[in-house]
Length: 304
Picture (spheres, rainbow, N blue to C red):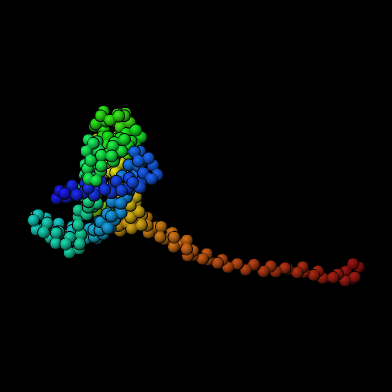
């Protein structure tokens, strides 16, 4: 057994993939794209569940970064002409508050080795070379699996080498577009709803808004269909997870936080409605009837 950690990771990823495939094969044909495609989706779900503690740590670190922004600005202003001292003081502040400025990249960095291992396993399927615990029989089964006519090992660039180049072209193109779109929407959701206007990281986040989708679009043409499916699924998970966090636990001073406070106020008002002020009836004006004046009786002598 090789001591290379990447080989160990390939073995682990292939074992998880084969285990999930054995489950999906009970419902779908073992050689079908449904069986292998759902196995990849289940692999994503398992990985993202394992990464939840890391995601929680990321959220806490981002909150701390938002809280200490006044101190960061003060240090930057104080040591404006001394970059080295400024960096030292900032690192000291980050250490004291338990803040990691690079925390937003942790989930992506944690997935990178798994992403690479899955890429190698699928590349082995394309070349009929078993990787990890995959056997020749399983490799042949995976080679026969197609998603909408495209083999799971097919890429945009090698579509001519597949049995159905047209299907491979369209499936890879659609998955690359969806992968890029979900990445863009996730980053935009973060900037628009959960970033304070005075946050100095706004400019950096706006750059990432366009950088990540471009990277996905450019590199995606070399990814197998199975890897594109993996990345699209994990982007969907990230978008849904971020939507939940932004809606229920936004950072103070952001539009999402204001929206949450408004929902809380509306809910409180609905639960405990304010009693309407009672309007006292106005007393009716008392009508006094005037009695007609009695005319004096004329005496009989007045006619004589």
